[in-house]
Structure formats: structure tokens, C-alpha cells
Image 1: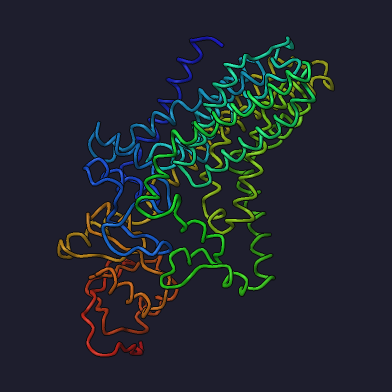
Image 2: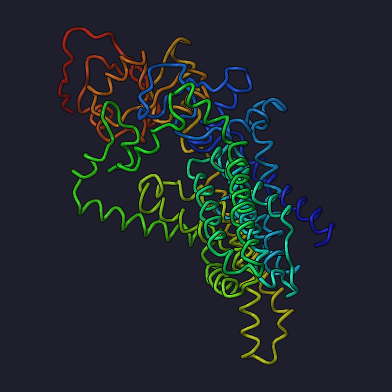
Length: 553
């Protein structure tokens, strides 16, 4: 590896990611609004509290509420750190731009380690720099950039913990034995990255589980691969081996332990339970259920047929996500070729094994367990941990494919063809990125609507809206999500949280469609303003028994 390569790749990555980051003047989707607004509160000294209630599964009692009881806190911490250095949304982007811009370096290192080919490392780095489906998301407060680094580097560290055991563990075929001190360092790094991954996303915990599984496989295989005497084997397995486990767990607790302690002190448990309830969702909209328990009984009452159908659909959507997002569709054949090749080589099998295990765990988790959240974006977010790996495999697969073709076409110049095809594929990836990113640079909802609502209602108002984090971001008003319930249940939430206005738009819950369309009215909801597809209702004080009156058009 040459120092000039690292400098050039870093500059290219930062410039390209800077271009996309500069196109963003505000968050573009709900998660990013959430992380940004909570970053603002952290930066202003309000701690881990929020003026938003966007889901009710953890039974919030009022505002301000404990923050990050569903999503994890690291993106908000990074946003807060950026806001302390620069004003506004551009300040919140600083560390996401840096991590996203430098991510090609990780792809370069992975590719170099598994192939030893400089051109392949460059190709892998350039694929990541281009961005693909992730380009429009990495540069805003979100889980993408930190999870790419924590997940991708964590998998690399786990691979390095055991790669030393192969008789020829370097790409040049020479025997290479890693010192115990170096192994300890890699186990510690793996633990630190597992903690950071979990601090970024709930499914980052899978990285720790993969680490534990790799450690078990290592313990099992040591007696078979060690050439020492029996007593020496006992020493390795019993002493050094459990020392490695301790370093893995220690690293995890160093980065994640403080958050577990905070949850226990504030919530009475190490981790919130809201996310676990999403296992039993029968429709994604019930993530916004109010006053109903999302539990196993209701899930089973849904019926075996519906459950099986949802899992089949979830599996198919997960396959499509893997193919389209980290595989960029056209790179998938090359990735598969390289995976098969490297797995057959003892020099690289142990290095890539954690990545394969993590990909399988991520697929099962999102397709078969947390099916509805997984297929509605969770797998898309988490898959970025595989992005620097998939591009490294793709670069190697291109080389392998050209070498194979050269055996059939003697007139080919394989080294020249590798560079030509690689350059062509990078151009295709760049063109795809331009179209994909442009479509995602605009916010999901119209910011002007939220700004107007903030000007129309009194400053003491509490507003219920479909995208509560976005409304809070633009108006500064306390915001509550509109529950996916009938109007009477919605009014129970209104009463509980002191809501004074309800804003409905095209993304309204289906049970409130009749209210939105004007087919029925309710004495406690008075339409006071409308603009385009937005309707703002003032909440009236209850006067007698609530009645729903038919409105004929």
C-alpha cells in the first residue's frame, strides 16, 4: 500500500461525499429529522430528552420524554458534536460527511488485505466513493456513516483475529503468524466496534453475537490446528482463549456500557422493549398503534397463512435489497464469484468468515424475525456495513472473470481488460448514483407546510402530525405522531398528551381517512386551515359525549 493512494482516495471520497452533502439543506426523511432534532437538544444542554413522541410502544407519559427509546443515540451524539462546531443543519452534517468521505479507505484496506492487488483496492474504493444507493443518505444525520465504519471495521477486526491461523495467511503465500499481542488488539477492536455498532443501531448487537460465535469456532478448532504439546494447548484454550473473549466483551462495554447503565437508571431495564414488540407487527402502520398491546397473541390470531405469507414476502424483499443495494444489481455476479473463490482459499477463508456470518444473521433477522421493519428500511440501513466488503469482492470478481475469459480468448490482454472493465463499471455506478441520489435529495414531506403551521398556531401548542420529528424541526413545537387508530382512540392520545392541534396530510393513518376526506366530522375536531393536501384541525374541549356526524357531499 502506498501513502499517496490513501491521500488521493481520502480526497476523492471527501469531495464526492461533500458534493452530495451540500445538496442537502435539511433532513430528507423521518429518521434523520429525529436524529437532527435530538442532536440540537443535546447541543443545547437538554441531555437525552426529547420534545417528540413518534411511537407509543414504550408507553410514554408526556413531554419532555426520555429520548432514544426505540432508535439508538450515536447519530444524535454525532449531530450534536457537529452543531457545537457549526450552525444549523450544515453543522450537524460535519462528522457524517467525514465518516462517509473516508469510507473508501476502509474498502481499500479490505480489498488490499484479501487480494494484495493495488488496482483492485482502487476499484473497491472508487465504488464506495461513488456511493450508489447510499449517496444521498450518508451525509445527513443518520445511521449510515457510523454503521458503515463500526460494522465494516468490526468485521475486518474479527476476520483478523483468526486469519493468522492458516498455514499461509498472507496473499503472497508466505507463512505468517500473528503475535498474541496483535491478536489481543484485534479482539479489543472488534469489541469496541461491536459496541459502537449497537450504539448506532439496535441490530448492531448482531456484530457482538457474530464475534462470540467466531470465538467459539476458534476455541473448537484450536486443539485441531495447534502443533504444540497437550499442556501448551490447554494453556492456549484455557488462558489466552478466554482472555480474547474478555477483550471482546470489554471493548463492547467500553463503548456501549454507559448507555446500558443510562437505560437501567432511567427506564429500569438495560434496553428498551419497544423495538422487540415489532416482531409481532401484522401491519407496519401498527408501529404507531396507541392503547393496544403488540404481542404474540395478536400475532398468532393473524393466522398461519398470513404469517407464512409475510415471511415469504419478507424473504423475497430481503433478497432484492441485498442484490440492489450493496450489490448494485450488476455487481452481484462478480461478488458471488469472488466469495466462492476466497472461501475456497485457506489464506482468506477465515478473514471473510465473519462477514458471511454477519450477512446471514442480518438477512435472517430482517427477513424472518423483524420482518415488517426489516423490509421497510431497516435492512437497507444495516446493509451499509457490508458495502465496503461487497465492493472489495466485486473488484476481485471482475479480475477473476477477466482471467477466466482470457483462457477462452487467447488474444485478450487480461491486465489491460481488467482496468477497462473496472473503469466502465465505475462509470455505470456513477450514472446510477446520479439518478438514485437526485430522487432522494428532496424531503418526504413539504417543509413549508410545517413552517406555516408553526406560524399559525400559538407558541404553547402541542401538534399531532404524521411526521412528528419533521414538524418539530421546522416549527420548534412539541410534536406527537398521529396514532394508527380510529378517531376516538386518537382523542384519548390527544387528552393524554395535551394536544391542541392535529395535522393530517396524504400520509394520514387509514382509520382517519373519513375525517380527512370530510365524509364525517367530529365535534372535538374543527378544520381551521388547509393547504394542498394538508388539513389542520383545532382540538376543542370535550362537551358532553363525543359524537360522529355523517357529512353528505
